[in-house]
Image (cartoon, rainbow, N blue to C red; front, side):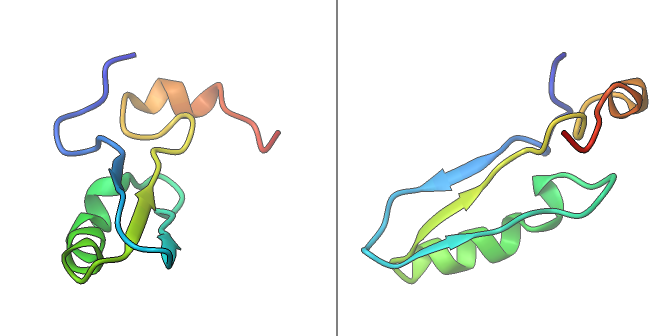
Length: 67
């Protein structure tokens, strides 16, 4: 499924210290992107993944289980 504009995952390779940001249920990386960019600008390694079933269509969420 194509990802909605702005909902793409974000990754930045910075220093030895890393931060994993996880968006909320029914959310997408878009909601945490400003934090990710803020931390990356300060030299941290940042990972902000797109969780399965998120950031596309609501029907995709219906197919995603906790497994």
